Amino acid sequence: MTTIESATSTLLGNYDRILDGRTGLMGVFGGDNIRQADLERIANDPSAPQELREAARFLLDSDVSRNFLDVGAGKGSVDGRISREDLEAALETIGSGAYYDELLDTAAGKGGSWNPFVQGARDGEIGPSDIEAALNDPGVPLEVKDTLRLLQSTEAGRPVGEVLAGMDGDDFAALSALASSPEFRSLPTSDQALVVEALRNAGGDDAVARDIATLLADPSFQAMTAAQQTAKLTEVAIQQSPEFTALPASDQKLVLDALAGRAPGDTGLPATVASLLASDDFQDLSAAEKTAVLSQAANYPDSRSVENIERLLAKDWFQDFDLADKQRTLKAVAYMSQNDAGDATINANTLDHVLSPDSDIVFAWDSSYNGDINSNGGLYGTAGGGTITFNSNMVNAGNGPLTETYNSKHVVLHTIAHEVNHILSGDRVADSYEYLEQEYRAWYTGFKAEFGREPTNAEAMGRWRNQIDGSASYSTRSWAAINSSPEEALKFAEQLSLMTGVPVPQNASHDELKQYIQDQVDLPSSKYADAGGAAPVPPGNITNE
Image: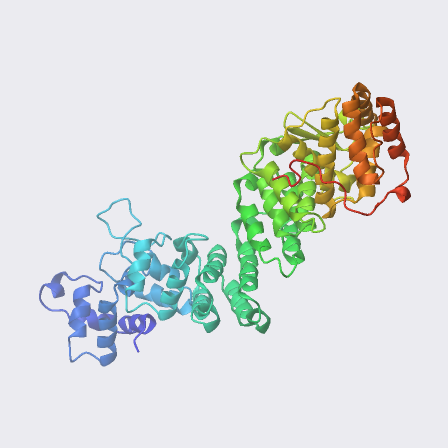
């Protein structure tokens, strides 16, 4: 079977014979280069050696091979003239095994010149017309065609021509073997695309191709579910992506830690990591900010956390934070996103209201908050005018995970949902039972968001005790309302009765109602009719829908 190597060698060995066999005008004006007419004469000359006739026929049938030899010496353009120097240089190149990129460079026989009337020269650019010509040419090796079809099968990754220009013979062989393997062929199209994306971004590197082939053939991979296989191949694609390779080694490790730390059932995490790395908002961050983002992805390797981190990066108010407040917000969102002990519906609704593109809710941090709930409006956080301001003393900065204290967990798991509930409900501070009931509703929502269950009567009474006889910012408003009228006092009394089980006195005077309220606040939970029973459900939105 004739190959380009054998054809080149045969032409070089018979170079003088080919030229000496010319007749007529070709004998006079043919020059010292082999022309297409020479090949046609040799192919049809029964007196020529069989090997030489086959070589000539091979090159006549293979425009790509002929174009390659035409500029074998690496100079000039495809002009239909093959010199002895071209053949010698081409044979040396073929012998090295690194000639496929040069073969493809001039496959279509054009390009590489400012003059459109001049045929192509080697310019290191392999265009669509070159690829098409190679695929339709009978002289191009099958492994090259296999590789071309493989790399063309997806739009993802580096441009095909750019990849091909840097590949050598080992690369083509490895990619061809992978493309023809039963393990690759059995993958769904979407998974094949992930493999090709990785190969294109890796520049067609044979080591990467062999590693992927080994992975696909591994029994543990074959035993995976379809979703698990996709996740694994996405991890491979991430590690070859330009976004990953552009990261410093320390940040690359954070990405790998996140991928390695995912729960086996969380097959969506690799895709969310890939999306995060490729997002414009991530790419626009400073080096320190990228490290902050990837640190929380590694600390909380969960698809929900990483997806919400990407959404967070798009918020203008987040972009305006300094690094420390960015770090606080990243870990708060990541930690809340994967709170499986909390109410999934409330947490998802809460985060969606904060992170959706059309949301008007804004986060802020204030370090001046201290232990007095009256100071600057709140201990953990407050909402006003669509802005939720959190106590930055409660949530640690830095790239580590959330330092899990009562206060930090309360801010992240309770206060966010609590304050979002106020904003969604349009609550306003007032000296009225209605306002205190709104506080109870927001607390009830935050409690479920944090713990995933309804509070008990005893826990709800603890909240009302704090609102009536505890925190000054609440109690002053409660007693102002209670003292304002018997009607307001009765509302408080009836609410407390629901939790303690102690009936409100019939036809009680205003003073008697106030005394009843104080008695219930002071009543130990051991005296409740059902301390562990379900707390009264407040009216209004308790799911942050």
